[in-house]
Structures are given as structure tokens and as C-alpha cells.
Length: 403
Image 1 (cartoon, rainbow, N blue to C red):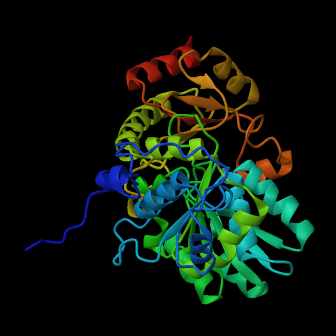
Image 2: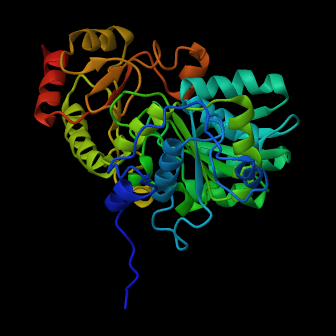
């Protein structure tokens, strides 16, 4: 008699969604083909009638894309009462393609989006500058404060989506997903959450009532800095089939088979990597907090973070992203010029430590006034703590700060 049991997340990360073709290859091959063949017209007819899941054209689907989507959906659905039932994913050619498809799928001309004040720079630009040109308006609320959110949703009954980024890029402020979802749903709006910083290892928005989850798979999901990619995960099959599948097919923001294959390979070690990322980040954050020349350190794992209690309730770990403020552009630039082990570059989630100046780099598309309103000062530095020895990362920062 077999006994049913739930597999652990590390097991799901390795085995969920895997495909094994007739060649017997242990690791699935890369299906580097633009089109797929049919044996005869009967097979064509079966596909047209919906009686076959055969692949036709790589823009519509590819085995590597299907495998990656299955794995990511399983991880985001991990721990849900009904498991992964009804949860599916679609893989895109970039994180911004995934975010754009999500917002276009949830909002049309005449609709309204409510989101937080601070967002990833390109997502900010999309919502503030691009979508209004297509008739989609927006309201920004600092931290999606519940009372203000309630007022804005009453004032804008055309709101169809509340867009959340938590932890926020780059300030590391948090949003209470559960409270946000409860308020949004009461007003008929859906909640979409960018889970890139936390990953499903540390935070699973569906557990808290979110409707859609988006990722830049470029970051921790791949983990090796080798691809650009994105994903949409949702627990509404109708939305995925009628909106997201249509948008990726007809707008065409598809990933390559090789990118999907690489990302799937990287995803297998995500639980292991995130555990070590978190351990290193806590060590680095405590060092920075101890330095008198550092004006402020923003890391959810520190008791000094104003939303530490929320992080403890909402997350299974605090991640590897740290924001710290040196008080001025000059001080920030001096540190960034002095680091050696840490690499001055945009992006995040790599095996190695990346460090950047948001006001000059990732968030330079935002006006100085809006950056100031979002807490993105000229002295702010964003750091993606890697998997090097934590002592070596600290030593590099120590030399840069005090050398």
C-alpha cells in the first residue's frame, strides 16, 4: 500500500516539470528548433482539434519552456492546500516582458492600476510613462499603506490590479501581501506580486492571497548571470489561457530554448543557493550596521529594519539584497571605486556579489524628484550578496569604507 506524502522544496526544485525523451538522456536535451514536424495530416487534425499537445512552432511552445514553467509553478504553489492544482506558469524572454504581459492582461484602456511609490526602475517607467499612453492610469501609494489603499480604491472604482513589489527594489521596504490582497479583493481588483528578490524559496505570495506572481528569472531563478528571462505564474487557468498565452504568442516576448534549458538547470539549486545567500547577507548586513560611516542599513533580517516583524511573518528567510546609505553621492562613489571583490554592475542574484548605485544606474530613468519621494538618495547603494566567503565580502567592504 503506497503512502502519499508531500515532497520537500529541494526535491521539487530538482524533479518537478522534468521531461525525459525517447533518447534516454538523463538531462533533457536542448530542443533548438524553430518548428516541429507532423507525421501525417491525421496528426495535424488532432492538434487542431485539441486532442494532442504536440508542439508546432517555438513561439507557441518548446519542451524546455514547458519544463521550466512546470518547475516554477510547482515551487510557487509549494505548501498550498491543493498543491499545484490550477497553478501554471508561462516563461518570457525578459522580466519586463512578463511584467508587461501581466499588466496588459489585467488592465485595458480606461482601467486603473494602484501600486507602491518605489519600484524597479523599468517597471516604474512602464506604469508611469508607457501604459498611460494606452489609456491605463495609475496611483502611487508609499508602501501601499492600507488606509490609503482603501481610499484610493474607493476613489478609483475602475482599478483592476494592485501591483506589489516586496521587498522593494532598491529600498528593501516591504508590503504586507495578505492585507493588500484582502483590501484589493474587496474592491474587485486583483493583486500581482513581483517575487524576484525573495524567490518562492523565501516567499510564496499565493499563500497570502495574491492572484499573479511575476519574476525576472534573470536573477536568482537562473542564479548564474547567463540569461535574460521572466515568468508569470497564476492560479487562474482561464486568465493564463485567454490572456497570458495570447499575449506571449501575439506580442512574441518568448525566450530561446537554450535560455529555458539554462534557467531550468540553475533553478534546481535554488533552495541550496538561497540558504547560503541569506547566511552571507546577514553577516554583511551586521557588519555594515556596525560601521559609523554608514548612515543606514536596510535589510529585513536586521531587528532595526522597521518591518522586521512583517518579514518574519511573511518570509521564510530574509534574502540576499541589502541597501545601505553613505549620506552622499561622493561617499557612495568612493566606496564603489574602491571595492575589488564586489563587482560594480546592475542586475542581482548571481553567484558573485554585485553592487551598484541606483540613482545613477538601475533607477536613473526616474526623475530626481520621484527618486527622492521613493527614498532613493544619492548616497544609497544596493548590494546583491553572493556566495563567496562572507569574511571575504566583509573584508572587501571594510577596505572600501575604511581604507
